[in-house]
Length: 177
Ligand code: IMP
Ligand code: MG
Image (tube, rainbow, N blue to C red):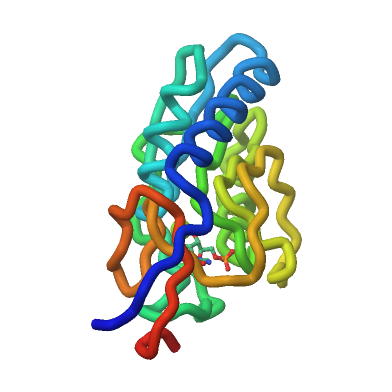
């Protein structure tokens, strides 16, 4: 239990950036229904803050996906664990994700959603590790680019722990594989 965390992005920095993202999204979308699709579980804090930073009507829905085991590397296989509650044909979809790493998850999700004929699908990701990409993903709204380090907090976990840290932190210590 002697893992330690080092703050990479403070809660204050994160919130300031999310306000900017919300303003950009507000400016970019025409009037009409904007569906925010939160990818569980990591993006739930980001969704809550981003939704309140977008000064327009939005619909919120959730999608569950698992591509990671308990550790830090992707299994490569993406599994849908919870589907959307609402139909998306003809609507603008903004996928809200915590972090883009290999791109495997979002590459897969965008394909699934496009089959349902939404008007548009874009991605808002709080964090991006561009050096790690294995699959192409177009992320229209990127919060902050970070180096190739494993981070926790503000929704992000390591083996389901640390999600409730207010800052985004790098996990360091003897137990971190
Ligand atoms: P991808 O499919 O490799 O892009 O992985 C995306 C998912 O992996 C994210 O939604 C996170 O749940 C998880 N992930 C990737 N990097 C990290 C990290 O540094 N900390 C915690 N979770 C991560
Ligand atoms: Mg995630």
